[in-house]
Image (cartoon, rainbow, N blue to C red; front, side):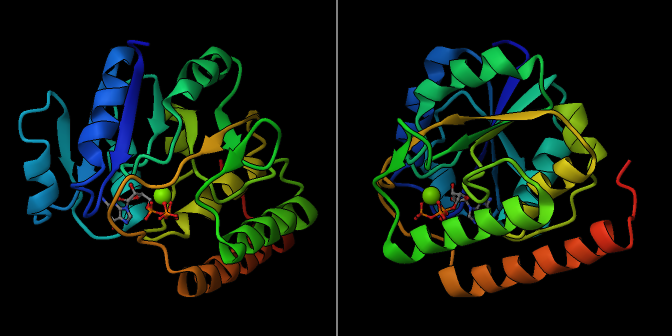
Length: 228
Ligand SMILES: Nc1nc2c(ncn2[C@@H]2O[C@H](COP(=O)(O)OP(=O)(O)OP(=O)(O)O)[C@@H](O)[C@H]2O)c(=O)[nH]1
Ligand SMILES: [Mg+2]
């Protein structure tokens, strides 16, 4: 997988990131940690690891990803969280399919996928937003917010993603659908995060995501703005 870069967004992940990197080492692809320059404890936890560090210029999850993927040089990239919840065994399965697609998404809600990390609230939110994606945008993804995906770097760059926060999680799949790109999903099992605290606030981020979906609906469905 020499033409793949694994991009790891990290914020306050000193408990989990060293283990995540150790698990990814056998795949022999480039690993980039995208992080804020002042996240000293996380940076110290991996100081002797052979990985590249990308310093995001702004703040937020979406900012870290859109800047790091934007500067990525390899043909393919994969977003891989720093909290230890993603299953690295899915990488070869995604890699096998990416040649014929623009993006390969994963879903916790198709067998044998699942989650040890969902709460009642996140399960409801994930299902709710995925249903909106299916009904209003014809998106064929049963887990819109999981954002464990592999993509063609050029395809990502064409979408001109602007979100600096967790709205990234809907802007990417919806724009990909508007642009009529090819995508597929495979099932995945989410583990509990290894340590540290979650950064998503179910209510605040859920509200922002809903507003983003409404705005994108008007912009690209009603007013038919073109992506490419
Ligand atoms: N660089 C960077 N990374 C971030 C930021 N916010 C979140 N992340 C990382 O993005 C990934 C996803 O965040 P999580 O807190 O795990 O979100 P979540 O998966 O909904 O929450 P959990 O259920 O606790 O796993 C993690 O690897 C975080 O460290 C940020 O502002 N900057
Ligand atoms: Mg997580």
